[in-house]
Length: 111
Image 1 (cartoon, one colour):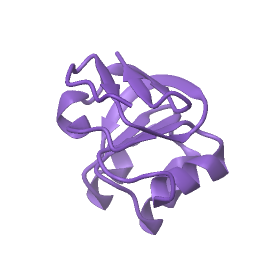
Image 2 (cartoon, helix red, strand yellow):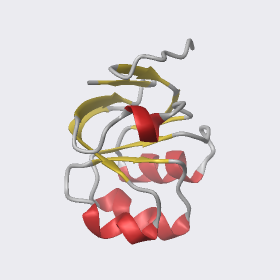
Image 3 (cartoon, rainbow, N blue to C red):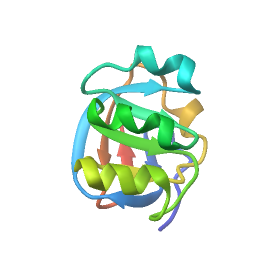
């Protein structure tokens, strides 16, 4: 799938199917977990087991790294929320608070 460099339309690897729209919440690590609100779109570099509780709160997940067997993809599928992985520069091109739509089936994030 071609990658887009435009901030308004980003491409990555489909990780968990479905569509969801919500505000971006850029999370750098556990110190940011308290900022995550129900319905947010979690945008991060990657996730690991300590992040699992966030998947019960967020509407979707976008990561800068990973693939279909990554922690983020597996846990997103378990929770039935869309995920797009390996989106280059997601943490800088998707501003905190901006409304985005995540299409986990197509691997697209749009503003």
